[in-house]
Amino acid sequence: MPARDLVAPAVAFVVLVAAIVGGAAAVPFVTGGDSTDVTNLADRQTDMDAATVAEAESQGEITMDSDAESKTVLVDRAHANRISDEKLSTLVTTLVANGHEVEFVTQEQARGTAWNESLRSADALVIANPNRPYTPGQLAGVQAFAEAGGRVVMLSDPASIQQFGIFGFGFQRQSNDAPALASEFGLSAQSGYLFNMHQYQQTFKSVYATPGTGPLAAGVDRVVVRDAAAVSVADGQTALQAGERTRLSTTRRADTYGVAVRSGSVAMVGDTDFLTPESAYVADNEVFIGNLADFLVSGEKTENAPAPPSERSAGGGAAPPRPPAERA
Amino acid sequence: MSKDTSAASARTLFVVAVVAAVLVSAVLAPLAYDAAQSAQSEGTVSVVTISGTITTSTVDGVSEDLREARTNESIRAVVLKVDSGGGLVAPSERLYLEVLRTAEQMPVVASVQGIGASGAYYGMLPADEIYVLSSSEVGSVGVIGPGGTVPVPDSIIRTGPDKAQPTAEDRRRTIESLKRQFVGRVMEHRGEELSLSREEVAYAKTYLGPEAASNGYADGIGALPTAIDRAAELAGMENYDVVRNEPPFRGGFFLFATEANNRTTVYKQGPGMAGPVPVTQPLFVDEIANHDPQLASYDTEVQHNASA
Image (cartoon, rainbow over all chains, first blue to last red):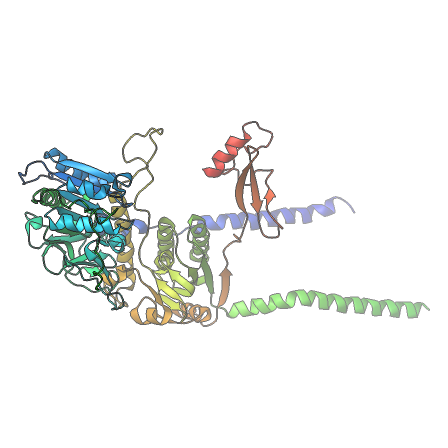
């Protein structure tokens, strides 16, 4: 076949391919390709005001009003207490700065009769989140200590409420199968934590508590607790109660829940987070911490209470409750 | 004789032609059928699958599918086939924005399979309608995260007290802010249908299908075909094609390392393997850089990269 016969088909091929491929390449330039208009949806959909959570204002000083002479405050460290030095530091520094003495009782220092011996030389006792049970002797010692006018402050986070066996202090459920133990001091707590979905600081468990009655509430407008248990008192003062529309996690009921209560020389706060250095100056937390410190040092305890063990009750510090006397 | 031969070759040709015709028709007939059918079709419904934990990579895949839906003129509606309990916050927001962008151009209908909660629910909020099964669960409108960070050791030098160590208060504020955005968007997109208040939404409860359909978290009970049909209807199509976009296979290989005789060995295991197999070649260059058993520094490098 002569070569010139192939020229025409070859030219036709090249022209066709060029036209088709070139046309295809030109289409996006004419139609604008497949890109779409881009709007800044992320910006349009963001409500800047709603997305900004204000920093909590923290200011003020922790001060004490009490002019009590130097007292000794004992801090329980002997019962696997779940509380950090950091949390305790705000209260301890306040006491020390005002001329009082703070002693920590470790597990080694609480063996046998040593616990009650420590109590005898102290004026006040701080117990936070104990995780190891008290011996009957230790319990009786704390009870005698409080009855003699020694001040006791119990701090407890919701999970630790069960652990408190002191003063018959009980763990109350809504059902009746585990009724609250009758308590000499009339203190009780409910299981679960408090929350408020309506008004809170930063997150729903950071509940505002407003002042009730008594010196623990003096000068307080509102306190912020971060993870609080509801505590109540039968015959005493509710020093702080959670704000309106606060609910209990277990029942979801909105009610007036106590956060800090006092019965005689015993006070109980259902939270420990208000003591952390970063929460201590938020709202009026610093005022409340000062009040707690004042409460600890303003008692008048009878000398040498609890009484040393008598010869008949061996080994247990203060005498545990004795069984009924045998009858002849 | 020659007459017979020519008759035979004519028959052979005839048979060859018939066979060829059948073969060619077998190939062309389905194409013709499809062509005839799609000539009737008014467009395509693209089914985009969102399943498993929502991470950057899952959202990358879904974003591609959604972009394809927006740019391909034949696709006129999208159905989100959702089966996910949520995932990371930022990818979930990206998913939300991609779905929103798509929903502004064409109907989008979500079909929840087992679960469509948290970040997955976030992602489907812009859909025109949400269908659930009576066994589906939707909701969990909220955010969780660690309350603080592990203290940075003193041996590490930092430029500021908040570098790599936010305070508990910082974390609370961050998480609360993310929650407000999430709840705000639920109220924006579902507000009119919802019988729940903003406060009730913020409880972050998960609802079972029938309850979700009655409180407004979903629009109705229905399976995937219902959602596809509804999406086509919203796009005004009676005859339509369906394309399904399944996520790429990720069932994959995982890596782990052991230490023995003072040497670290990296293993991989995947489908079709009887057991863990030692890795002798780098699998993911970015993650296991310079992995070479011959190198003296092998141990420390693998350990470093494996824990990075």
